[in-house]
Length: 278
Image 1 (cartoon, rainbow, N blue to C red):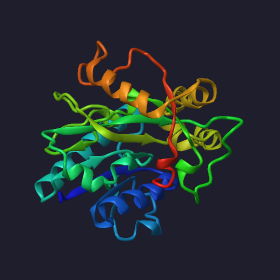
Image 2: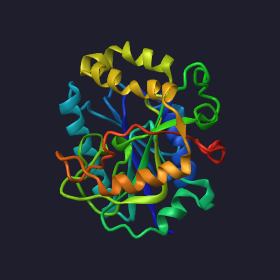
Image 3: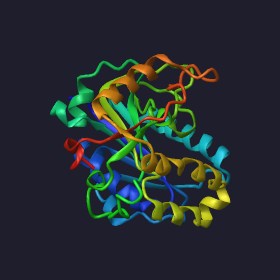
Image 4: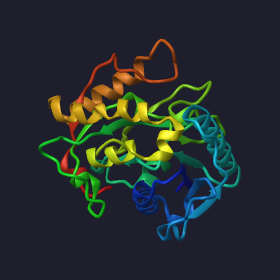
């Protein structure tokens, strides 16, 4: 079995981080999780017991410069871990979860241990929304996937999150500079950052995020809720297969090492077999 670490950096995000620690701890072991808090004014929550949690000086005050600095920092940390005995490092935000399709009957560690990864491996991005009128406010004490069933196949979240050697992630983990990507079969990156209207309203009014320039970004991404509510939900297995093939071939003209889906907006309904994973 390969030795695998997961890393992230957070600021004022205990809601997602708690779920992140629970999920990746169950898949990889708590001792293989590395969480860096962006700012020494942060408080390390009790649920971080057993993981490697560290306060760090705040990186930047504006979204663009802060993101570049954050990903440079995390790329360096991943390189350190790969140099200290880890075979793979998973780098994701606290609201992102790399998931193996349950039909495979494998844990994340088992799946990745069987993969031959030269530089990186991507999971097909699923950007979850809330289907208004059908799905109620999220209950943090219940599994997310019992409460949210609709996601857009999103190229923004097909990220090269899993690395086997030192490299430099671009902002948001969206690409690895000077390297192509490969999408793993039956592997998904589930993004829950914009999956609840009530929580989105709270984030829009978060002074810390407003000061850093996140407002326009969050409003733009909130369209996921509109898509989940208004676009027809398509068959999961058929359209994720299509998405994997399409994204593996098509590239946007401005970035050959990012995936594209020709501006198609495909929403799928998540099968019940995923209900208890996150």
